[in-house]
Amino acid sequence: MYIAVAGNIGSGKTTLAEKLGKNYQWDVEYEAVDTNPYLPDFYDDMKSWAFHIQVYFLNSRFKQNQRIRRLNRSIIQDRTIYEDAHVFAKNLNNNGYLNDRDYDTYLGIFESMTDFIKPPDLLIYLRADIPKLVERINNRGRAYETLIRLEYLRDLNVLYENWINQYTESKILAINTNHLNFDKNIEDFAYVVNLVESEIHGLFS
Image (cartoon, rainbow, N blue to C red; front, top):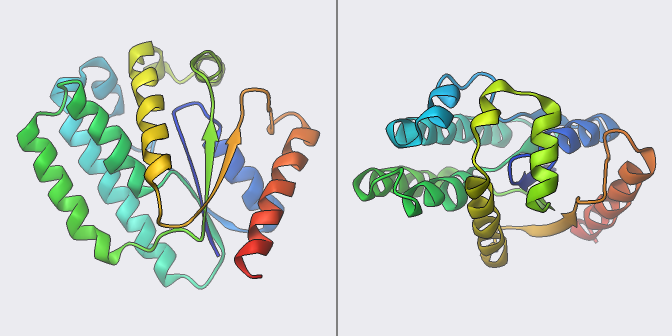
């Protein structure tokens, strides 16, 4: 089984992927954040580094997807390749950080990959409002994330909603996380597990 967790920066993807992985003994494929050499430069100067960071994430996610296809194990993934193309790259293009020539080149690479991409069996989409996203980002204390602008998060939230409303690759479980703390509150995590259990059973019914 291949499960993916999607959502904006600070929505709780990594935490939930990790906890569900432990709960179900699934392998976890993490987003290449701490190993991405472009992130600090990108948040400091988005226009200069937009293409570099998007290509890096796209390549990293494609490699993950190929690994998932090869392995005969249940896996949960922190963010999907679809978000890279339809949310993050699109947002950078909309705001003038990624020019049309670079955006078209990027989309061409993504579209060439689509025949080789395995969609998840279940996509867990985490929603959160901007104040909650900012609170979580501040609490985890990554230095480069202090440069993230509120407008950037707002734009991403809009694009996430547009994307998820058109997403047809797999089954979707959407969860509002504004009042959930599945990292610290066992009842909140149990609530999410019950939702996931219902969807998993539905996949094989």
